[in-house]
Image (cartoon, rainbow, N blue to C red):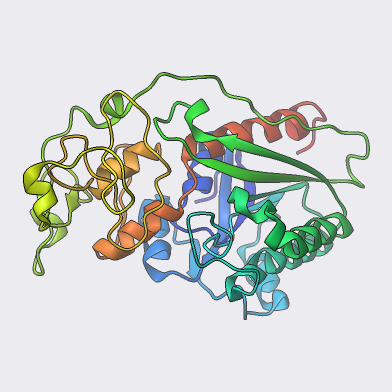
Length: 336
């Protein structure tokens, strides 16, 4: 069921639905979502609550014409689009990142899709999320082409870098956000990003109350994980866990109870170490550090869940952006 009092949006490179969840909390509703990752699509649909709207699509190869037709078939005209194309090729944490990474074309594909949505549905706005490394010198060509493409699509472009720790999340996570507003429909409009406020919320506040998680085993099923189906983690095999890991390092980065977490973006076997130093965080603990609701559920195997939570946009950040857009366009102008 699509609720009549919600503002319909399209979600591209939707992942596990962090952006959509935040926008939903602000009065929007995703009517169509697409992502290449099957586990993320399953997660999105499992949590949607009303219908399966996410589809597994390779947005780098499916024609824009076909995507627009899929959206049109929903029967509801979207007012906006949201999305965060994969950012690994731009990440400063990726020591092998380069301007030639094939994933680096995906932001430009996103811009093409936005242009198509503007032409077919005359959408009011879009939101684009990515890592700050997108603006590094070695990616200057992609960054410049992206902004030019979004400008040529007919949008006034607003850009800022937001830190999740200012939005009630005990995690330092900086991301570049573009908000584009339809220049023809709103020629004189201005947009201000939410600033949040300095919070002292700590890791202890978010996960200090949790029981111990279940450790992974080959035949473990979600029903065998009692507290929350995502409250599981890898077996701590390294001797470092037995001895107790000191704070610091990359592969064994131990968190501190009374501080904020570094960015939840885990590479292979690099899930942050629990403050107790005896194991790595569970998926559920990482979800709470990302600001996901306690009842949200990730699907797929352990590796798939690690990837989903690492790539997610924290819902509280998404909600703040959505509320700012809603106030600017749909309250200030009276648009509907």
